[in-house]
Length: 58
Image (cartoon, rainbow, N blue to C red; front, side, top):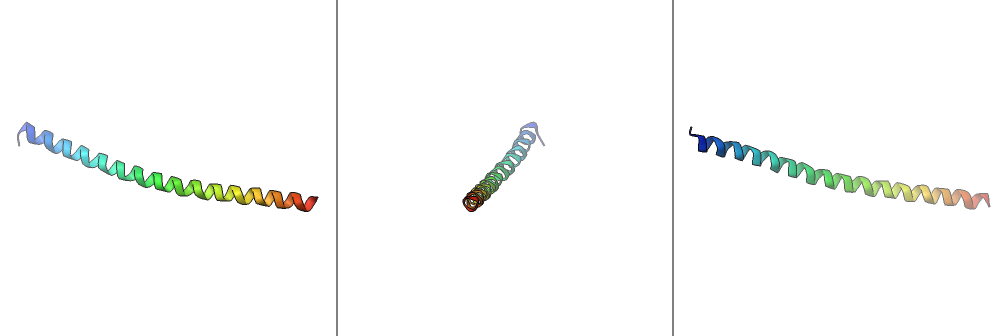
């Protein structure tokens, strides 16, 4: 195998690795968005619970 082909295979392998990282990054971004949504929903629930508890005290 000549040097050009070796370099081509090396570049192809690096391209595959980067493609996998991009896919993993996109999946992580989706997962993060879902976690953020769940967190905000829990924050809203906690605020409502606090408001309800305060209204019962008065």
